[in-house]
Length: 265
Image 1 (spheres, rainbow, N blue to C red):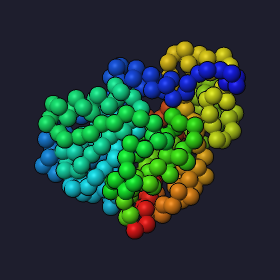
Image 2: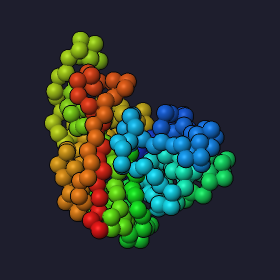
Image 3: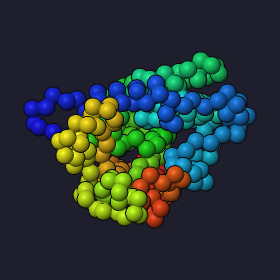
Image 4: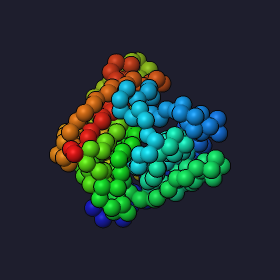
């Protein structure tokens, strides 16, 4: 984008997710009353990637203070609250947060919803949470390292950060459907990836005009190394495959990555 472009990336992505929530997209579809009732009985699951969480990552939550970071939409936070956790959900999108509030009203759940940018958790005091649950979402901010620093700050000693993100290899290939139809991967974008610098002016403007969220493919140095630099110890690593491949590369490597990081006691 030109240096004098007044475009507000965060406001744009907020509006994009408000629009997706209004359209009942997959990540804005609240869980059913049956799922909440089962969670109250102790039968529940939340996901960082398409498959189940690895054993030992979050086996019980009763009594834990959990921050669901950039993960509104009426899905993970209400389930964790029904399972007995003290849950706060924090998200950029007001409409996504309303999905969580709606489930809480419907099913009589105690749940706190706060709007904001995942890079700034100043709404919360130091050492406020036992767990930060952060499913794939940091591709919507240009710099992920502030996210890890803020997660470290708001976690209590011994607390866990459970996060997921895309393998950055998914951002490398040409998105022209002609290559996909032929099963070809044509590398064209260097990592780290950013829509705002990698796309030509016409393609970027078209994406903005369509109201699509703009994304960033952060390097593993920033995703994993950034957690370590923030002070975390890596306690678990998980790979998962895309069940509905969108890109050719999805058929060859696990393109979902998840980490369990611990703040030293």
